[in-house]
Amino acid sequence: MIVVAALSFFWWLIFFSLWVVFLILTMNIARSKGYSPLLWGLLACILPLVTVIILLLLPSRLQA
Image 1 (cartoon, helix red, strand yellow):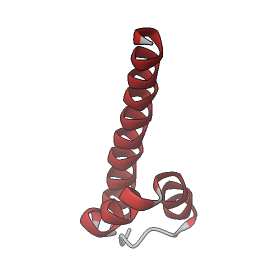
Image 2: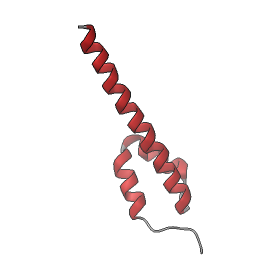
Image 3: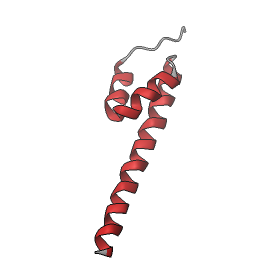
């Protein structure tokens, strides 16, 4: 029973770590393209992978 609890904690730790990585990645991409990192970060809290994909497809707002 202790082994199952330890594995469960391990998987939740991996899930949480990936969620944080996608959140930081989303905010950095949004900032580099000229979008609001806060708003995109809030959206990434709900749909992290989808938000990264959408941001990668959006054009940059920054003027050259």
